[in-house]
Amino acid sequence: MTTLVASAQTKAPSPFKAEAPVMPSSLSFRTGDSFERAFARYLISCALGPDTRVVVPPSRPGEATDVFPGEMGLANEWAHQALQPEAQRLVSACLLARTNHFGVPVLLSLRQPQAAPGTSLHADERERASFSRLEGKFFGNLFTTPPRAYYCRGDDRPDRWVWLTGLKRVCTPALLPGESSLCGLQDVGLCSGASLVQEGIDYGPSAIDVYLPDRPSDSPQEIRPSS
Image 1 (cartoon, helix red, strand yellow):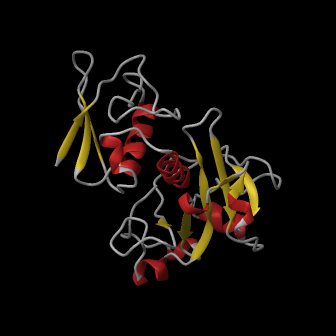
Image 2 (cartoon, rainbow, N blue to C red):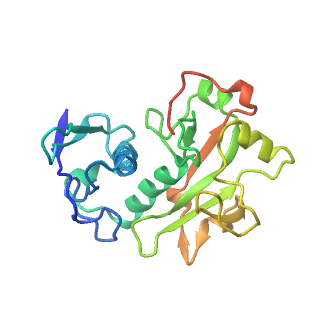
């Protein structure tokens, strides 16, 4: 187990810049801010693997030490070097895919068609059967100024809104096509190769697919808690 030690402080380099420094010096949040701690937890969970954790000692007497474990390992190199653009986009896609408007845990299947067996974005046959309907593809780059956050829709079936609200996943339906969703993600239409190219950047290689149970009542209770 590799332990990286960060510090909670008022001002520090932001991880969300194109020149994002090496983790954990890039980790910054306000002491006592539960939202920023939760965000840091998901950031580290997406970027680092299960053999790495980030420890943030208390900055004031009486505060607890925060321990953020890695999980998915999408950018393990962040432990020793700044993220390159493709890695920035992959970590961003993971964060966007796991965003929840209600702030509640929801079981997801996060996938990439090109993911090798045994990696965090590969789904086995059982997972594919349990999570069979594509919510959409999530992509962007939260490290740029301004940040980019997109999604494309997996389908436009008439039951889509009822299905997603039943699963407490309402970040993908935009109020109007082409506008931002309740979570601030830009709707780029139905998923296609063309929809993954935005402002001259092909996000296809870094986009992450989110699959959900076909019906809320089918939601399994033990496969990959990801959101």
